[in-house]
Length: 144
Image (tube, rainbow, N blue to C red; front, side, top):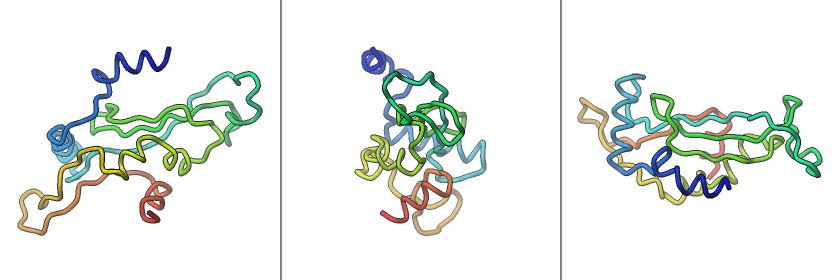
């Protein structure tokens, strides 16, 4: 059922952004947050659930309740750009990211990010576009 819902609704509610849409997201981040070349912000949230039968402690998280993890990249208006949902609550943030479809798309360069460009209003060398995340995920990116 969840797969069917995703297939029917993701194009309208969480589409894969085109290169032009990424640029529009970046422009909005610059307007709203005064942060140039930002394509999104990443974070995770534990979604409380009732323990599924026969799962042991897989869903039991460090906050002492049962959960699944929602990881999302959002734009400057807090709208989902990409998501990964369903990891066991006990999984640490870095492993959720490392094992996600979202990470594979990022590292395989399948998000169609715009190429580096000079910062607005400068003649500086081209700068890459970035996603912001907490330190734990930045350490993963640095290691790879």
